Image 1 (cartoon, rainbow, N blue to C red):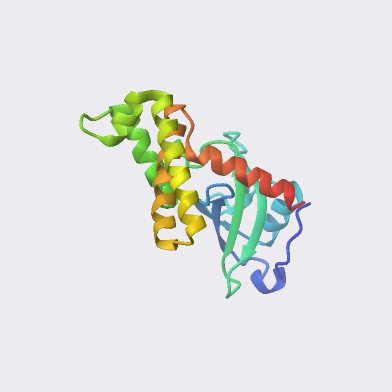
Image 2 (image 1 turned 90 degrees about the horizontal axis):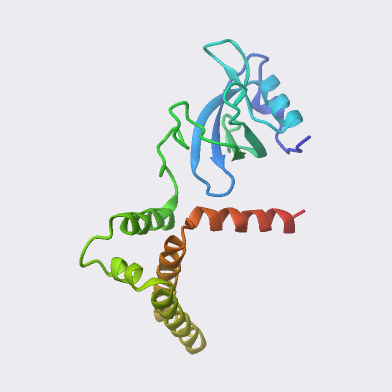
Length: 206
């Protein structure tokens, strides 16, 4: 059973109190969906480790994925400052939206700029538009991309040693960009790196 510091008496003031629950991907922090919980669904979620809502249309408890198999593995639950909404972090076992989309808010709902940059570079990889610098990198292959990463890494180190923060930010930006290009060239998305780092963090925090 997952532990929580939430004061259920404060959140679920009455037996029929329904509280909106914002579901967020624990790795990417992308908002996936919004559902409603009552005290019973909240407690069942904690006990089973799978997110369970109270369905207003069916008027019963509903474990997300009970029909599709796309369960939401519960990681943590936090309440907001007014104790009238919940933030539920999960590890999704598949698409969350009934339309087949990963998120009910669209594929890139709240991925942040690095996620958008990753998607943009992925698009460049598919379309290979003429005249694009990114296209030229892809055409150069692994050797050319890695050479650029080496150059940008060296420049980043130089600016760090010089303690030139403005230039360090600039060179670090170049380094991250070229690293994403390499990942996309090798068929790896930035979200896969995020999940790997998240997994390491969870293991080290135990």
